[in-house]
Image 1 (cartoon, rainbow, N blue to C red):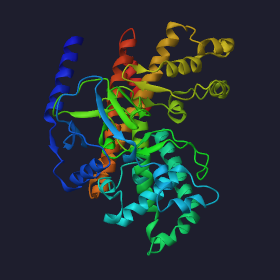
Image 2 (cartoon, rainbow, N blue to C red):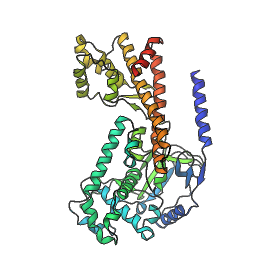
Image 3 (cartoon, rainbow, N blue to C red):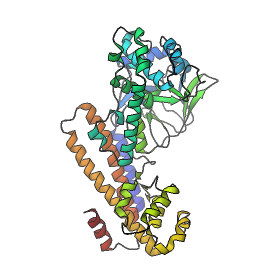
Image 4 (spheres, rainbow, N blue to C red):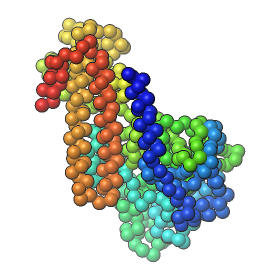
Length: 451
């Protein structure tokens, strides 16, 4: 039966991939101009062309079969937009004399804003014109949409937004120093919206490339490079690639460890990131992401705690001191070892104080304690499931009357919540299978606790 379900699942996935279709974008003016501009800089690609995919949006489609270990793309150094590009430009002299030095990030953002403003007169105009006009990163979210994120992610997103706003505010004096470059007031050009667009462009689309540290920039690591055309490659968590700057060829190269069939989308992998990290940093989620988990923060953990336990505060402090209150998760394989270990320690009686350390190291507990921990994990799983259902209902309500940008943002959050709901449903099945038998009081207790 298990194998049969696996076959059905694989068939459904294949059917879903077959239902997706692509439309080439290579004939559209922005991409024609981009390819023509890149060709003048020494880059051309006959094996990858821009396309719009019904299930994911813009990407690059293979025009021929690309074999495993073949070079997927090789972008010459002069096609890359780096801090070196900025320092050699009209903006370079302003950056070089500014004190204290601006960061590599601010330098790149400032250049993008300026180049977008100059329009067709900009050297980088063909690239700027194919960049997204806005993004689905949390820095674009309204407070209503931020509230739909899981607690831990919401806190990280709030911190990110605060850091962004602080960076924008602290950069104002430098922006004002650029006024001689423009005829319009600098306040009208370097707005928070413009900076958010540039910041998101850099944050979501740059590749990692180490540069020699410039004396004219701050001490922050200079490892960012915008890579026209290459940045159209989308992320897939199941793909393996080798990527980096080749000092011999002076090109940024990506080699795929898997083959890609003709007319299929070519993918790269940004790293083994879960969906919460992908949404926070890049503004999207990856369906069926094997790295994804659902996090259990302390606030949720308290749902199943025995408030009458006189050692509770001491136990939580002990767990915190041993760094055991982080990365407590549910995955497709059920609750994590860390989560079950925390529950085991919380189950210990006062006379078992001496066993705390050994439990964290993996010591066994009684069968009754194991079943208690499974029951508490079920309670947590149900609590998270109920929260997901509530949020999905709220998303449906907010979609009514939302504009296109809000619809896209809600769609990303909805995708995250649906992926997490699937993980929790699978965890419920795993937890139920761990019990010696399904006892009526267990399910009733979980439901009553949530009520």
